[in-house]
Image 1 (cartoon, helix red, strand yellow):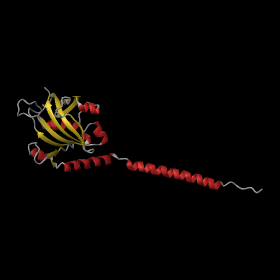
Image 2 (cartoon, helix red, strand yellow; image 1 turned 120 degrees about the vertical axis):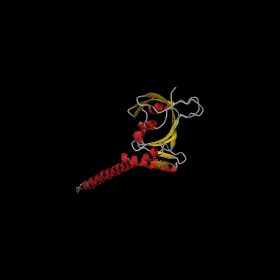
Image 3 (cartoon, helix red, strand yellow; image 1 turned 90 degrees about the horizontal axis):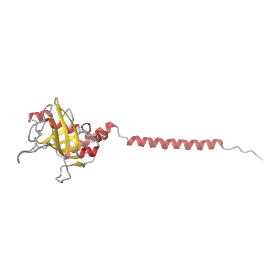
Image 4 (spheres, rainbow, N blue to C red; image 1 turned 135 degrees about the vertical axis):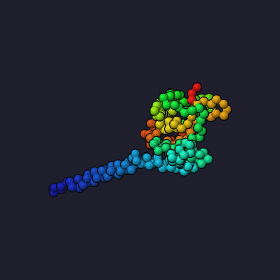
Length: 224
């Protein structure tokens, strides 16, 4: 009987081909995963594009801080002006200056805030408490001004419940250097009102971690 050698080379070749195919499939999967991954730079660019689109779609006229100062620190509502504040990157429109007076240096005060919060990238209304239903209470934050700098924390309201934090977005504090904080004493008195485009660097923790800009409409009133 004639001895027939086993096809070792063929078996090794088939085994190597399976290993090669497995490695190739794994490599393709990794490359696909990498292509889906967004870097921080990618997310910031996405944010900038979303803000630019929002500004264009809303027919907003952006003015510089210098122009804002020349206009007496006001924004022209007829032209739908927003000032871009260089230090914070926040876009602000002062709808109403408000009654009363500005928060004084060294003063601490409770502010009642009613607001609407829009996720600009998601193009959706996310939170609001500016309705007239009885269950809708204003958010309250304790604000202190010291050497021209504002610090604050929420003491109650929807922002605390929604984001599990008493931290006030830095963007919310920007208008306090420009508007009055009072309580109406007559039918002619109005509380201050602003509109803000807040980049993630000036937003709450969720905005910061997801690199998302938010649009706010906020009124400020001194608590009784």
